[in-house]
Length: 94
Image (cartoon, rainbow, N blue to C red):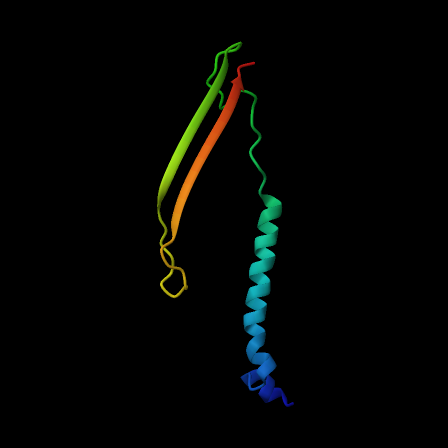
């Protein structure tokens, strides 16, 4: 391998090298940005609009039914869904 072939990028490894270097730099920058970011510290009662001493209890139900759409290339025909969801929740104002 000569110096001119290295500079011209004639070798297959040197042609893939700039792509690898760009991916490595992007991955490194993304990792470093995660080190600099931090989550927000939530204060007690910051998002609670309940007076102190008041308690809530809630029950809800949701029923949905209907057809499903799939990618035409998939071998699925006549997709249908029946979904019933019940939830129970409590909230206490302290």
